[in-house]
Structure formats: C-alpha cells, structure tokens
Length: 186
Image (cartoon, rainbow, N blue to C red; front, side):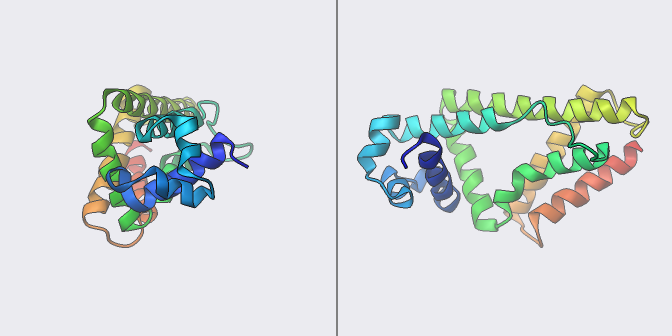
C-alpha cells in the first residue's frame, strides 16, 4: 500500500524523530517499506514532501469540530487546545518539531502553509470560545478573536518553553496553562 497517507505517515514519523534538517527521503522510504524512488516519483523532492506534509496538516484542522456530542464546551476547548501537541510530548520530538519550524520559516511556501494552519487553528478556537461566551461560560473573556489569539499564543509559548526546559509532561503543562487562563475568563 503506497497511498499518499501511508507515505506521509511514514515521513511524519521520521520527521518527529529527526527534524527537517536531518530528514532524508531514504529514511522515510525505510519507514514506509518502499524505495526512495517511490517518494521522488510521488513528491519530487524532500521539499515537495515537506510541502505535502504541511498541506495535509492544514487540511486536517477541522473547523467543524467545535465540540463532540454531549461534550461540555469548555472541555471541547481544552481538548482542541491540547490535542494537537500530543505527538510532541517527548523532549526530543518537541525539539525536532522546533527545528522543523525553523526550516519552515526559511521557505516562503512552507511559511505560508504554517501561517494558514495557525490561522485555521485560531479560527477553530475562536468558534469554540464564541460558543462558550454565548452560553455564559466565559463571561470575562475578551472578544472571541482576541481570546483565540491569546490562547493560541499561550499554547505555542508553553510548547516552546517546555521544549527548552522540559519538566514533566508537555500535555500536563499545556493543560495547566490552559486552566490558569480560562479561570481568569470565568
């Protein structure tokens, strides 16, 4: 099975272990159980593969996910805030994600995809915050666009800080910071 998802899953697994700078198509091919030529044929180059992986990440952010049936609004907001970091709950993998971020910032197309993903994530958070404000669960929150930007900045800052000085679990750290912020808005 050499579907794009299979190939991208393999590449993403290797990227988490190596970061973009040390990543090679050969490593991804080994992980996928195919030849490097399969990756070259499908994606053209390492850069093409990184672009496809980034585009898939952007596409996977579900703007319609503003809570599961029966899920309390604040629980949905916490889940959506924290779940995208679960693959970085290891200091080495988190560092590899940061090194990939640095590489993305050096390529205009990858930077554009990163910006699109971050914008989409903020819009998702904003929609859930708006629901929470409308239902009276966050009476002290700023307007939803500002609240979403604040929450997103807190999450990304916590991620970067934990990557430099890991202590305990990243997911726990994110949850703790989320709880501290949300408490000020209740």
